[in-house]
Length: 114
Image 1: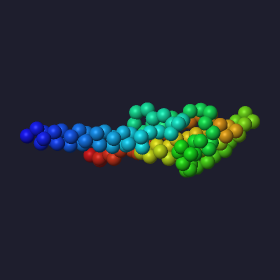
Image 2: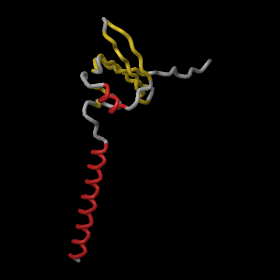
Image 3: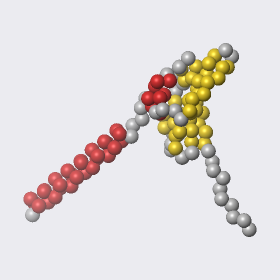
Image 4: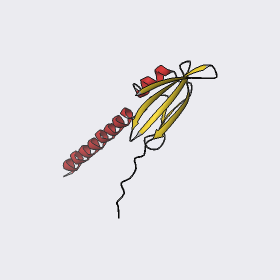
């Protein structure tokens, strides 16, 4: 009887150990790269001072690029699609991130005539 209990306890502890290792592996896969902070659900914040290459490495290719001149400096704006109707606009001066903004596109709700 004690052998059966011992074997069952070993099996239970092994299952718990394997489960904990799997949870840790999932957590490691979900870790964010340096420079991106996630606060709450689906919010991306970038630290000012990152290079254009760093931001593109973190977020991928932009959906659009625009350029304008402000006070004699060229400001390049990159727009990144973030999902759920959101876009992140990152502005660079001399390939250094100076400003970010997240825009959310809200679709009008359907109305019932009555």
